[in-house]
Image: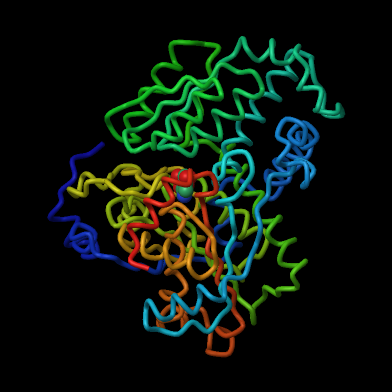
Length: 443
Ligand SMILES: *Cc1c(COP(=O)(O)O)cnc(C)c1O
């Protein structure tokens, strides 16, 4: 890593002054391109998404039995798409600005098994690894009914292998619960900000939880080191994993189906704007990739980050990607938003996706708490703070005339648009913990 010259950097990128002042900022990406022009840089395409989708279908009979909560959806881990009209009114009042389009929410917060967006990527990566090991051992083939993985023979087989991951909480939950269920020996390296209830829940599942007093970056590095010393250990690399990314990307075709079922049109005259909370970037990046493949240039994705952890905005805006961390600017990376407390973004995701993302914005923890209370009051939906990061997105989009003009979107088109807030977590937060969250909102 080269020595950063902060003075040069802030004169080249004046927006950084606002980041350092912890102000809420919005940055629309001047270098956004069409899917056709941007796709070659992703290095993956629809064949890869299709492959991931088929793998999840193969595992569905197993998941339906291993996790009864997925029985209704036949072992497919998917979330609801809901309208939030009362919240729209509350948001308009909160920001004192109108929203012309429709406001909807994707409830990954309530995904089965682990109650967060990580039930997509994290679980998919564990399943991919398990399948590979079982194939190599000649214990399983693609045409088998995968519910045979419930048999003790498989648990004994997987017990010889271990899995390790570094996490701020939710990734550890997904990987820990899924790995332990299959029979793997699993260690989750948790950063200081990880909640006690998540650690306890993992221990109940027989997961080895290793705690750190430092942040996510340190937990990941320690996890990586430990795994390197053990050849039977597979380290899940949140920052660089294409497998995780592809697990998330399947959300695109699933959402397209849900839109069709609800007869919501997405086309040039009916654009779709999606607001995704971003930590290291794999979740929102993979989902944005899937959305682009499903809806083409009619979907516009924006990433949302805490003012104290704007790592992806910083990396993409400066073009330095993972060569810069928010701490290099003196930003502390301290936020109540679990999953978003990441100082250095994934270079892989930033470089792959930067041409396909319309913009980035930040918001304060106070605003997340406020919106958390408002959403509960308006819609009776309870989320964890990070999951509210997508909520102000519609306001930013609808009230930036320069951006709308660049897209050729007029008032009529705006009125026909859909704003989708990707709610990323909160479904498993214990009641007491939720009461404490709600108490931080003045609603
Ligand atoms: C992990 C997480 C995110 C962001 O995902 P990344 O892949 O880290 O960018 C957003 N919200 C919640 C609740 C998360 O747990």
